[in-house]
Amino acid sequence: MADDVTAGGKTENGASALHSFDRALHASLAGVSAPGMTFAEGPSRNRDQGLRFVRRMYIPRVVGLGAGFFAVASVLYQNHAHALAWAALIFNGLVWPHFAFLLARRSADPQRTEIRNLLADSACGGIWIAVMGFNLLPSVLLAAMLAMDKISVGGPRLLMRAIALQLTGCVAAAVLLGVDVQPATTMVNVVGSLPLLIAYPIAVGIATYRLSRKVRDQNRLLEMLSRTDGLSGLLNRTCWVEAVSSELSRIERNGGPASLLMLDIDHFKLVNDRHGHPAGDEVIRSVATLVRATLRDYDTAGRYGGEEFGVILPDTGIECATAIAERIRLRIEAATLEHEANIRCTVSVGIAAATADVRDVREWIERADRALYRAKALGRNRTVRHETGAPLAVAQINS
Image 1 (cartoon, rainbow, N blue to C red):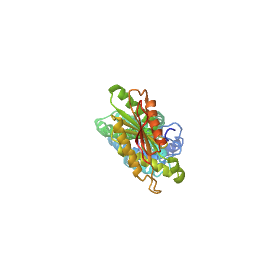
Image 2 (image 1 turned 90 degrees about the vertical axis):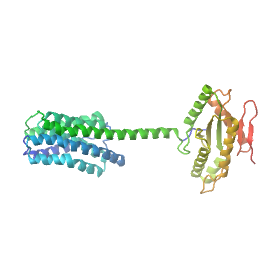
Image 3 (image 1 turned 180 degrees about the horizontal axis):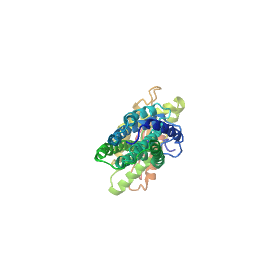
Image 4 (image 1 turned 135 degrees about the horizontal axis):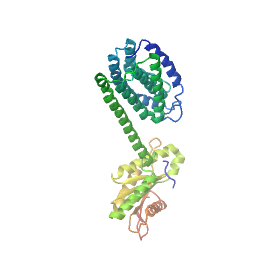
């Protein structure tokens, strides 16, 4: 049978300087879409994925730029900065995060727009470092925090681009504004820097935790999907055979009984020929549901291939296995497996116990399979068990 199909200095000219730099920034951003960055920088193939990325970056930006506002404000306050500098700070720290969010969300390519927003954050950070006269603590803290999210989002490549734009913004602002270098940090600056020092790493940590948890959940789902037959919802053939091997190894270590069932839907080809493959698929799903509902919690069912299923019955001797097989067979016989065409089917079942002379997994499965084909040969819709040293025993024969 086939295998199953189975993200303060001089500020009077501040407005014109920022306007000039804004043009330079947009010119440089035109080339940010280079291949090889962690987040795809070509046209987005999945707008929903891009929107999720935008939403994920929104809170860290609100917290980071909001907290950064106090660090920069502490320097502007002690340097008696011009009103234009305060207006620019209010916009960058308190308005820009929301504007950037709307800009990316309404973009045809949200992911690329958000990458540009992140680079704009770094460029503006460079401007504020110059405007603060390179005040040591706020400047270093601002540069470090702006590097943190670039690394977490796009790795070294995005970080290098962000640093380049940050240096460009810093140098441009220093030249255009004629900034005086004042690296001394006062207690006012220390206190003003505390929100950024505390709040932003926490916000980034929370965002990273949520992302890692989502990735972990997706990995679990992928693992489950890799083990599960997509049509029946049971284990696929490879994983079921692995489970048989584990059970046989357990028996060899600890002893005790175990049995194997192989089930096959009778005349399944006729179902496909008469009613079509969608109806046949529904029959397979229904049989799998009935098998699962009849078994105990510790039994293991799988789709072996096509219309054939396998069941592992741990700690189960041949007599009890026969009773379980009969319950399965009778429930399937009594059920309507596809309601639109009112399809009813039967199954044939073969049973093999894990006796001392079973050498390996292949032999155990082959014994149950031979019993199954014996059930087919005897007229189908019956259970046949393999018994060592004796002819195949027919447990139930229905006309």
